[in-house]
Length: 53
Image (cartoon, rainbow, N blue to C red; front, side, top):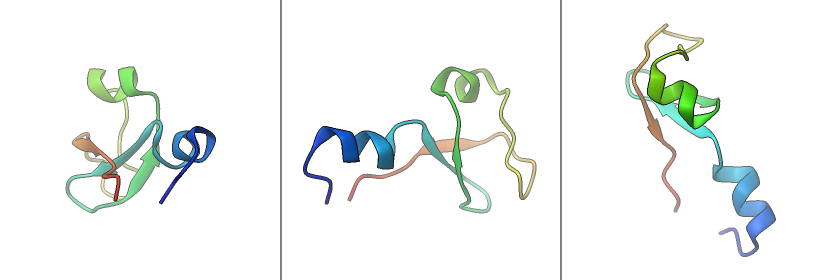
């Protein structure tokens, strides 16, 4: 899909998916790991990194 590093960074860096409602959110990794980021839709704090196809 993304063949060059700039596009791969734009699509996948700091993008996480809510485990409950599957909404994408862009946030720094350290904040997600610390639990400081909430989902806008369901207020959950459970996230996973986006999958690269």
